[in-house]
Amino acid sequence: MIELLVRESLWMMNKTVEICLPGDKSISHRCLLFASLCDGVSEFANLSPGQDVVSTGSCLSHMGVAIEYGSESVKVRGTALQDAEVELYCGNSGTTARLISGLIAGQGIGAKLTGDESLSSRPMARILDPLSKMGSQCKAHGEDGRMPLEFFASEKALQAMDYTLPVASAQVKSCLILAHLFANEAGSVHDPYGSRDHTERMLAALGAPVRMRGDTIMVKPLEKPLSPFRLKVPGDPSSAAFFVAASLLTGKELILRNMSLNPTRLGFFRVLERMGAKLTVLSQQDFLGEPVGDLQVKASELTSFEINEEEVPSLVDEIPILAILALKAKGVSKVRGAKELRFKESDRIDAMVKNLTACGVSIEEFQDGFALEGGQKLEAAKIRSCHDHRIAMSFAVAGLLCSGEVELDEPQWADISYPGFYKVLQESFGG
Image (tube, rainbow, N blue to C red; front, side):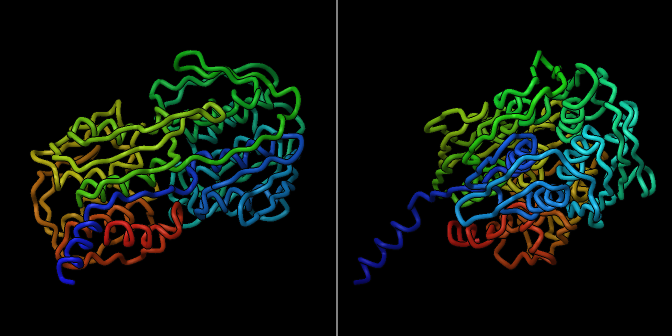
């Protein structure tokens, strides 16, 4: 009997963990937004259940878009947007606020956008300035161009422009692409940073007049509504990063099913390969211009990493969990050129440095990054989530390295992107 229990215990320790991820958050936002541009009903399975995507749906509903949430899928009936009679609450979602602003400005809709404390501290002049130059009547009510944002109804078409992004931001790029769909003539958005390209990929696949030419996205006015579409939203690689990290920290083999393999989202995995992680794509196919496949992760010996400014746009959400993995890697890991992390849901550089220091880790802070040496012990501590799902989730995974308890002050922030995250982590890796 004892021998049987030992064999069963060993089998459980070596058992491959398989996880079907929730729908990619970035793609889910865009499914709802682009469905509003269609003539008819679009349908989506595996839409992200996170609160950010709920915020996008709520804003669209208040402008006349009919959204039906079922147990297996979400249906959206497209329509021209209507002036919002109530304030559009974007919650914690910068994607909601910035992308929907492009649609509102483009269609000349009257609306006022608000957000929670974290979102209200984030810079919005980066969208208001170019939208104003295009002729949108808009303003910020907060200090230094911050929320609330107000757009005034107008029947005048926006003036197309050729715009170069001053910062690496897929949200700003997407906002301007959507605005240009309703401009008076063709325009372009130049992205020298290689930020996420879901918007241009999906719109082009749906037949919108959007074309990519190197780093430049050419956009012509939308002459007629798009055709309705269906999609099973692929798994979120940003959410996947936390389970991949848990796999590498515990040595448990992992298979992630139906994950987005968009090249602009795989910076985290490219860094892991440099660190010596054993990653294998088991299968791959394309849906709406988005590559999708299964990813296998095997136990690996990790070495330190260095990340520079050119890489940051492709892993801006994953740097916090990379800081946790650095504790398991041999050598000194360093991140530079990541100043944009200070303007996310939290100041992520500050949050990681202060929380790791509280856990007894020696870490050097830079204005644009940090450096820390692997092999350090992680002590029990109370962690400040800083209203940021990526910080909360990173330190939940960090608990796998700690002999004591890593206590999150506000664990509920994980629901922003992944309701049920802690349950899956506990069942799969004992976190």
